[in-house]
Length: 183
Image (tube, rainbow, N blue to C red; front, side, top):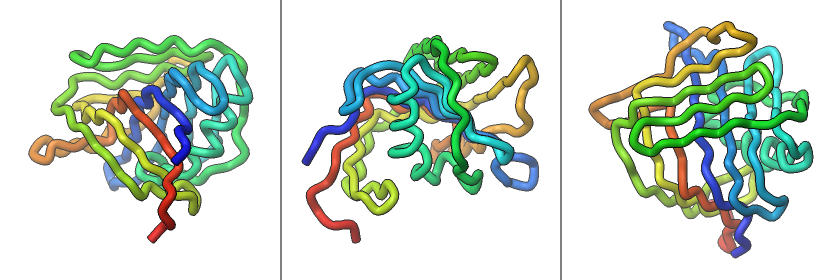
């Protein structure tokens, strides 16, 4: 087993009234990784994929190795050659109230936690490569993405009974390669 990354990855996927994904944002706080530390914001829409962060190599690695394969977040929004923007990512996380990030002209907010789970998946498939993912997963009631001052359309899907949400905070996130073959 090889440790790949430790950090946090709050995400929000927005859906239209018909249930189709309209956009997603995945914001990384990398405390340690095989490619260094730092922040990156990955924004996906049907028009384009953007990666914003101060370290282009780290951002590209996060996008290519992780985001392009996390289909539960992209939910049908196709991966395409990302547009890279060098810039700082302001990352504010409060596990009691929520999360906010600002990068270039993008703002992401995920608020009102409804539960907290410790999760582990020993067979997380990232493009045919088996990984182990352990994280504290915190579904939230609200989430939004704003670009150039305009809020993107759609709302997160929330099931308060489960409780589950497509707006969530993943903290204490650890990714490792798995030694066992994918099944």
